[in-house]
Image (cartoon, rainbow, N blue to C red; front, side, top):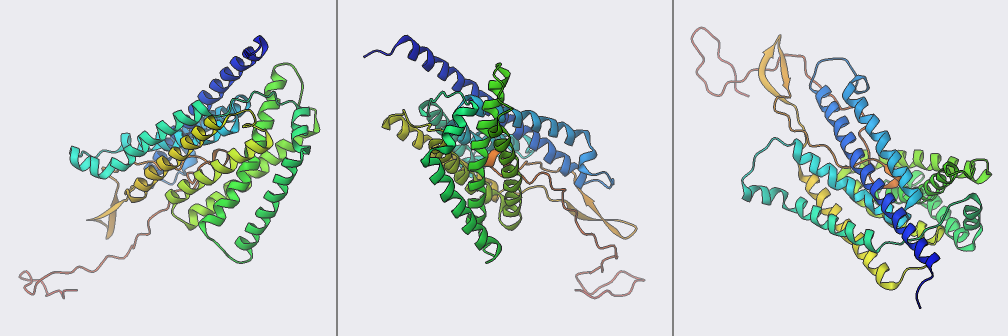
Amino acid sequence: MDDSPTQQAQQGLSYTDNLIGTLLAIFGSVIVSISLSVQKYSHVKLAGTKGQRTFNQTKTWWSGFVFICVGEGANFVSYAFAPIAVIAPLNAVSVLTSSILGFLFLREKYKAKDFAKNHGLAFLGYVVIIGGTYLFVSFGPNSHEKLQAENIVKHIVGWPVLLYLLLEIIAFCLLLYFYKQRSANYLVIILLLVALLGSVTVITVKAVSGMLLFTLEGSMQLNYPIFSVMFVCMVASVIFQARFLSQACNLHDPSLAACVNYIFSTVSAVVAGAIFYLEFQNEDVLHICMFVLGSALCFLGVFLVTKHRKNAKIFEPYVTMDMANGVPTIHDNGLVVQPDFNGSFSYGALVNNDGVAPATLPVNLEQPAVTVRGTNAPPGQPNLKTE
């Protein structure tokens, strides 16, 4: 039986909205990756200078901050057009873009054999991410629901959502108890806390952005109490999520944290969208299986890229024997800038530790002891003991 003209029109409009949301999310991820690379470059340049300026007093850092605002704004608006299940896995694009930017910044030259040996896994990860992104975008849910205040309230009072929120609160309290009271600083526990907060974040972000879009179209939604509730929950979840992410990066390897956090947060976001907004309600088994396959490929791709990044060497200032008033000289000539592709903490997807000022190297101001290998000293000078 053929679909009615009204259903066909709604389906076409839904595909258009999905395309708009997907393109906005990809654009936002790319812009955020570029901005973080620019800010990282600003940090590295300041680390090799003797000036007293902080990173937030440079034009480079502020230009990166402006790009971050633009990128995160695009990510925010994308949730108003496309389902959470399509937008959340697209954070893999941020990993892909940042890693490619790292190669562009590299000043090393490799032979083809050495390049394949050192960076083969990363390029394999790029291919897997691109293939997985195509699959989950093509076969992802195509829900098209106007998020008015009344619709959001109906979703909240439904028993599946209430049960889901209850289980999430209980799990969050238990994990927080072990983390705070039992000092269980395991990476899995911290990132599970981040993922649970991330699920709340994506639910509230989609609600707030949807109501704002509906308001711009002429139907005021901002005077409903549910808008204020969702907005407060969104801000609070983002703040606490960022704090837990920062603690995870400080206690564990940032690249490993980025990979595990992407997987946990994406799964929790997809589950939240499926339960709260019923995004997979009208999808058939084939589309769901292909979506799961595409998401799994993205997980694998992110793992391969972050595994390569974990073994790569970042910028390291070096000390030579050039002496100026008895003080060793710290050089940054020929530095290799490889921006971290941890990305931003954009709605619970990846890790961002770029707001932390670069660590300075302690320099011993005392003139080091001079050692000579051998027993014969130059004429007119005393023998120096070999250490």
